[in-house]
Image (cartoon, rainbow, N blue to C red; front, side, top):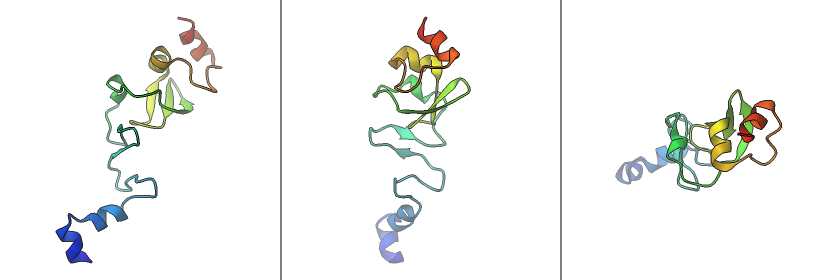
Length: 101
């Protein structure tokens, strides 16, 4: 199997480093289903050039929404101005203040 793996670009090794969602355990980035690069090495301001649908918000961390793509965070004020309040959120004083602007 090693010979075939070497011939075909070490695909066996690469596949062994992925989990069931094709996230790399080595910490490398991956491409999500909408074509967005995601992972720990994505620049913090990835959302500035992102033109896809509103990312799914999972949690609030300080002044950021934890989202399902990019480096996992988008400033709350940026998110609300671009996509509005996410479903199930908008109850904190900070979110309400931004939404009213």
